[in-house]
Length: 274
Image 1: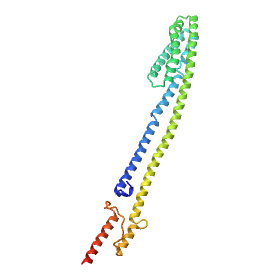
Image 2: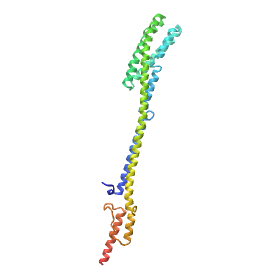
Image 3: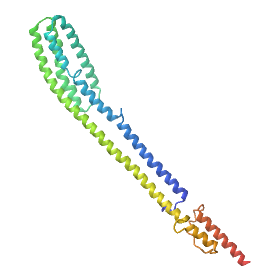
Image 4: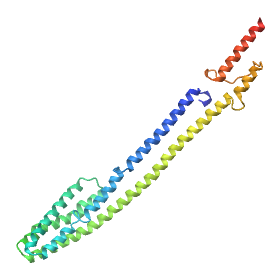
């Protein structure tokens, strides 16, 4: 159906619908972008999760470097000093287990989760097994050769653990960087989509308004003063003037002028007959 065949009231209803639809889509997309990228949004939480991961492993509790250093201190400490250091090792082990349990419940990528919960954890657990089954009992008995032997085993486990930690840090850092870059790209892409929606709505409304305005100007005295010209011809007695009016658009000015002309023609006809 051509626009010219649509009633004026319906045209403006269509214009209103276009405006509401365009800006509703624009608003919904804006809300979606803000909800995704806002603070505490999904991307923000993922970045924070990665930073928490690094914070947990550099250093404790998930990086056992402090446990290793405390063990070295205990080796050289006096009998009176060792109790506090042994208690510190027990606390560090409890902290490690607590954070390890936390990360088992987190939604990590498979590669990161395997690296943390297997490659990093296995040598750490081996380290603590030696600490509590051999190293601490030897210190409590003041058996320094046995303690030294246990410390050498602990050193080997710590070395393997440290290599795994370094790899995990590298993986988490790359993930964080990728998430930040994806967030920036998503912001740029979403901004262009929002702009495209807005411009499209404006363009459609503009075309629609131009079409309506041209039709109104043509019918109501725009170019070439159509309605005014018809009225002047009728005023001079030209009742045969052609009026381009849609028969169904009975509320238009041209229809009213046409009805007036027809009425005048009827009156004139009656007068002539009389």
